[in-house]
Length: 180
Image 1 (tube, rainbow, N blue to C red):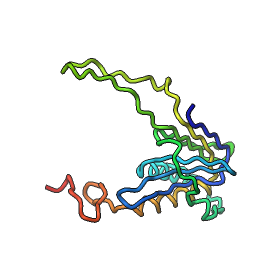
Image 2: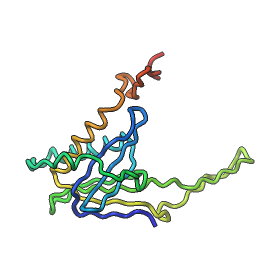
Image 3: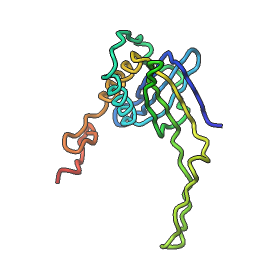
Image 4: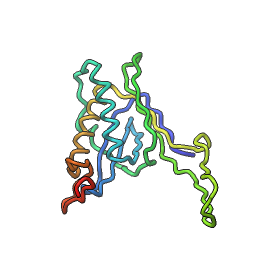
């Protein structure tokens, strides 16, 4: 049985990174009371979630309420329940909440015939047959805004991007594919 969490409200929804730039592990975390779930994600996924939430918030009035700084820090334990795959985002007008759905990345079985150059088609399990971890939560406008600010801070704390290709630049340099 996979992980399944359904939060109609959360005390905190945040993003953080563990490790040194270039070797960081990015984590999303949702907490409500004593219940928390942590999900491993990619830096770009965290940034994309923040970008979408920011675009939705532009059309809504500011709530003026700011979550506490504690709500933006990762809380122990930080062991991820799963690795992030598909993300669903939306806005519930009736309840004035932003919906975030996070699903587990599922690696499907690939059957390749090594004996033949003309191997048959790749067979993938149907996604409907996979028991995938799932977290669904609703955020207030202030929680979504705080998540966006935290995500921007965490993402920017890493290696700077190359101005030509956008790939991260290591402290010892970077081989840019756009430079000959």
